[in-house]
Image (cartoon, rainbow, N blue to C red; front, side):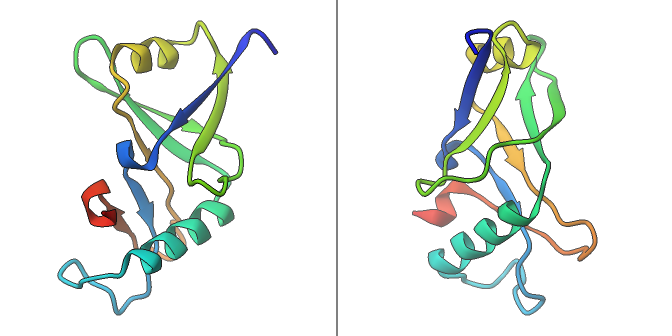
Length: 117
């Protein structure tokens, strides 16, 4: 629809929280393929994610989103109204954070863009 705007966040601009095996800890060196595989698995099994933007006062604004399935290029697509507050915030500051979590496993790993290079 014309009243909807598809938003996307490139993986280099987002952080994704992904569940990895319990043998992995913060000190481990993890291969990029392992990170991507784990992230894809969590993203495909999770219905909702968190989208964090910054408002005009610099405060983070978190909202729950129901994104489209992840595409082959690892781009995450959302649909929302062009006039929504989140769209204004993203236009003002395109740096966003998107996270996925599986709360039942109670394990997570933060993947930073520099870890994927």
